[in-house]
Image 1 (spheres, helix red, strand yellow):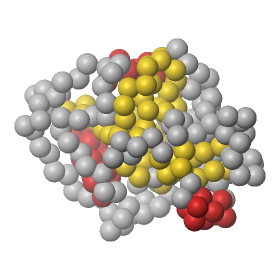
Image 2 (cartoon, helix red, strand yellow):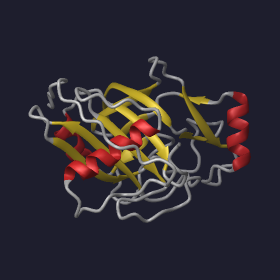
Image 3 (cartoon, rainbow, N blue to C red):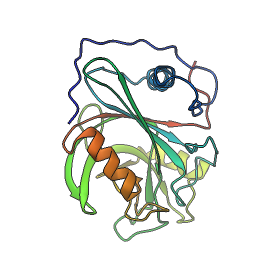
Image 4 (tube, helix red, strand yellow):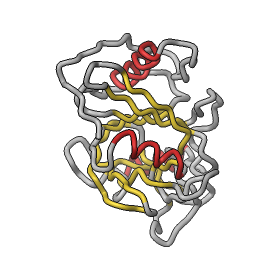
Length: 227
């Protein structure tokens, strides 16, 4: 379990006006941490030294390979970055290959179309075990279960601009969006949840602690960071 003093405060530069990328592993961890913290804050998220943060980079893999952010099925090809501070202020940074999109095109549990969580800022609550591992439930910053989403209405595994417009026009939301074990090693088993492959999920749990809440900022890495 991580227990970080809230007295440490680190203010990073804000990487604005360009698409997010994965910082080089050759850079000092403090610089990489600052870059990711800057992404969170540039996207209206709040980084608090006493609270773990997870950053989701949709459309960008840990090796800096990009794919279409509208893709809603396929392999683990997004990046999930865990940020926190050790009690002495040392940065804790872990980058995982995971999915911020679904792993299947359709489900009887989602008759209106498989969901895709919209970019934004969220918080989490403990959800107990899911797929034989601890999981977390995403809610709005106000604590509401209904989170903004798009839906793959035509079940083609892709969130088109028309589907986005329809969802936004109708105020589409989704419930029970989790971060959970994706079960498979190459692609996540999900109808809208955020997933990590089993070994990465176990490392995430071991690092964070089973019941530790965290904040989540999800961004479209194919779009420039807001000015």
